[in-house]
Image (cartoon, rainbow, N blue to C red):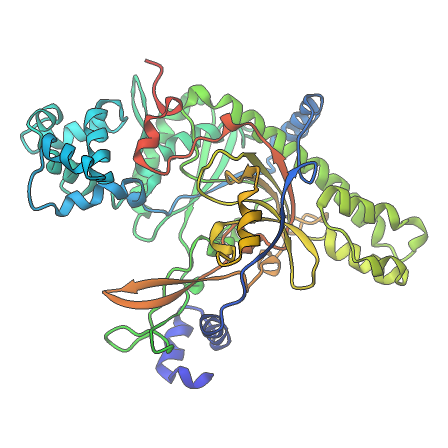
Length: 523
């Protein structure tokens, strides 16, 4: 396959840190996509999902607090995604040749116009959005006001001020920098609200909170400018906010192919290499060198007045992880001595199946003790994550499932709809039968019993990729997207699902989610 790449191609790849073997592997995956993931059944309470008893909460919280005091905790928030999807239905108006007023928009709504209906909702509810003050100031810089634009039905201009660099430029900014919630002293961005929540969950005995955000290339300075006043405002919390930023490494970029099934090239003949999706952030997570790391979506954040419930459940999830980590490390220490007499193996097999959902092959029980011990150690010595899941309320995204691997072994996985074979009625039925949803609220244990960080790349499923139809400057292509961060990139982790209440989950996928009661001010 090396004939697909010239000497200059190999130099281009080498400059990005991509080996020829990796390029060939990617090209093979593009030409021969792996089969879809195979669902066995959805996880349910008592079958892959735990429902904790209230009597367990105090002990779990105490375990969390002990680890927090010792500085074991940090937080990673992927924050590189652009907010353009939040405003997707409004973007067509940026190219509207006219200036449709209310009557014209109402006519479009009558013809089934979703975008027109959304624009009218934006206009009618504009004062309820936390960013309305900033939008008004943007209008005033042009000699107008927000109320004037609404009164004069200058709706396209309002969209341009909101979404383009004529004003707030929200369609191009990362979602982290969008003003989500209103307070008497001013609006707060999703970024600031995340740090307020972090100040209650990742604080050590020295009152230091460690946080890391992944950002899109080119936005590092913008994030830095936003963080300085945030740290000043949040000094009232009595916490020192230590914040790191990183971007997705270019060595994780992937190839694409054109309709001719050859590597897609730019006009100058060089290879097109694209960011490979958020699964590549496993490299950023590993580079943190963290011990216990909370992981959460940037848009799943409540205003400060409602953060008590998610903070409490983060503590409970972390305590659950710590309880499991303690028992896992105990088994590892008992199994590693060569004298197997001190380590009865049957209880460890039971622990692995009951606590980690990882049943051993039946034939292994009759194998020599040394082979059994090797299997148990291999299954126990790996990263651990405890994931909160909420009752399914129809939100878009993935969920917890039992998945059958190529070796027929069942594992607990977070699965996205795009991973499921849409042509299979049986697989669609299993997907539709899911009772719970993954809100991406988890805590991860990343070190072994000796305190040495696991190499997270060893626990990825490199074939859990998605080949997607895309385009570049009007030319069609097939792009390769790496395993998602909490899907294939964590496929070989030990995984535990715990039910958490719906009140901990408040995603903002579209701008109109900000009109939900939980995102509105008390006034």
